[in-house]
Image (cartoon, rainbow, N blue to C red; front, side):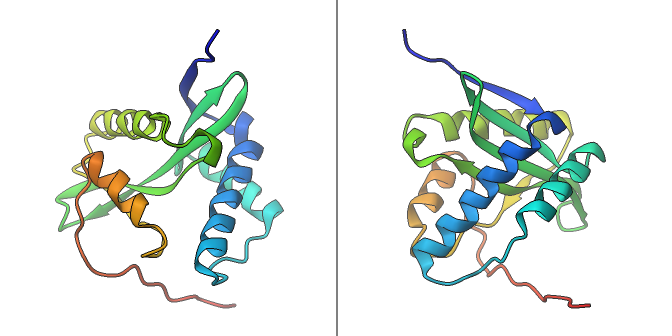
Amino acid sequence: MKNIIQYQWIGIQHVTEINKLAICLTHEIIERTGVKHFDIDVAHSEVLCRNFIEQEKYYVLAAFKDQEVIGFGALCESYALYAEGAFGILQEFFVLPEYRSQNIGQALIQQIQYFAESKQWKRIELCTPPLPEFDRTVVFYQQNGFERTGGYKMKWVITP
């Protein structure tokens, strides 16, 4: 019998699993690019994930095979005049490599789009990992309705 993938908006009961996959995402980016973009404290990251979910600042959709989380998408809400109000930001999105190209990512995106509509967001924005190492990721998002908007993701690190 073929295992069925289930999709569910989750709460804090799956924080450890989501944190583990988020760490996998950052490690994959580092491995492919050869640049240490992230230096994540795993324990602190789990605390943040728990707090964000509890405070409804972070909405997480998980893909489950049996009882295992095999992929997820995490969103937060933002606001901007250019977006004419509230919109979602897809902060993290990851499917375990052995489950890719099986329409799991596509199903996650579709459920995320339904959620965005229910929140009456004007759009969903995201930033892809570095190019050209993640060109396939850009194609995936384009195939699922996203369009390139140009520019660069930039940051300014505030140190205490």
